[in-house]
Length: 189
Ligand SMILES: N[C@@H](CCC(=O)N[C@@H](CS)C(=O)NCC(=O)O)C(=O)O
Image (tube, rainbow, N blue to C red; front, side):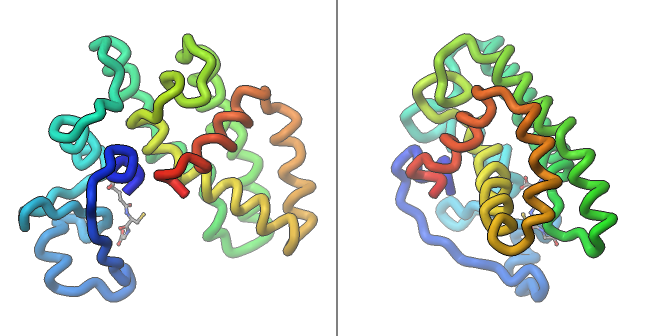
């Protein structure tokens, strides 16, 4: 949806109850997962495949023109599943489980921070400079949840914020800027 918005494509959204997936959905989604993009009735699944398809058929181009940079962008997009698992503490069932997850989180955040610091040969705010790209679109939902989680817990559970504070002490400004900027982009919010 972020990329569809960035490319000004009109679309309709059908929300799926993932605890009770309808048969018609299971027929078009081989892994039973969202998102699925339906193009003239033809389904396309997997976020990266959908994003690459949109990039091929709809202007403006969001991938860098340089082929090597484009490949490096794809490589960082491939890290998203690990990143999202690494910072996903929403479903922890106990305090201990959550503390363990929080302790491991910084390594994943650090990797993205390093990627932004080393990969970006520009002033940002996005991965490739002033315009949103596929890398930003793929990380933005997780960064958005990350910020919401901090906000939510700030009000609900102060202990969580305190345990997060060590994370912030290791942040460099560039990462925070990326983290804050990315979810605010119109097509994300
Ligand atoms: N590799 C897939 C993963 C998508 C995915 O994990 N979707 C989750 C929701 S965010 C889902 O549909 N889960 C339902 C399930 O696993 O049953 C993609 O990038 O499109």
